[in-house]
Image 1 (tube, rainbow, N blue to C red):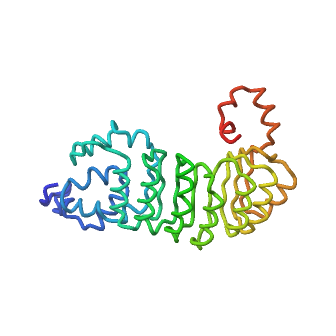
Image 2 (image 1 turned 135 degrees about the vertical axis):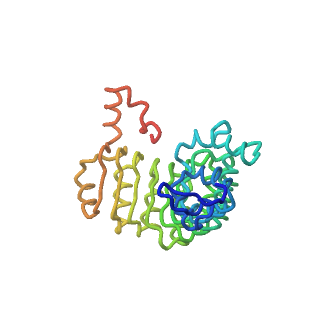
Image 3 (image 1 turned 90 degrees about the vertical axis):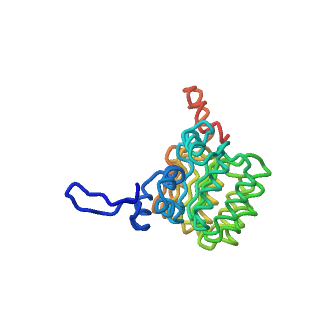
Length: 293
């Protein structure tokens, strides 16, 4: 990529890759893996560095894919940063800061892996750097103190439309209340865990305009399920697959869900039914049900 003109197979002279229009390079770079845009493309030439810094490439950041292989200090990405930027100690927190800085406040879709070395600090960084977030996916937070911090951050994301919580925090009722107050377009929630009466009441009272709700693999008693369905009347999509606490063939549940366009409760059962199955098949002891009981 020396900036000189090159002849193609037909003998036509064209500009070098380094002299391509920035918009064209950005269009090409959007097909690259995030780590290539961060660690490789900027070092080719000034034109590539300018294109790699375009905020549009950093608006959607899914950092969960292959997170163990990608972000460990001995991984290929760490080696690339050490070789090209002389980074002595690679850490996920530093890579996250780089991505958010490149986004320039335009990040709208962010999914974080379960590798938060200092959750409060990193969540504060996300809150400060991502005022335009529309979708946020969070891993399980590490302590009750971290979970208690989450409601205070929600007002920083007034455009938020969808929240995915890999594990339902103990502060969920407060989170739901903040979503109701500060996120007028919020319409999609995904979480998993033990859905308590106060959680169901919070969904029904604070989030009645939900259009999409996923509670797969949760402990979800029938009473709480019915309270959610009664309060969230605008649901178009509801999933509570493989839950414990109600039976997928319960006539009342099926009847309440009939108004929802996509209603899926397959594999859900009562606790005693699960106990019987676990006794018949010890392999189930390693399933997700153990985590929600």
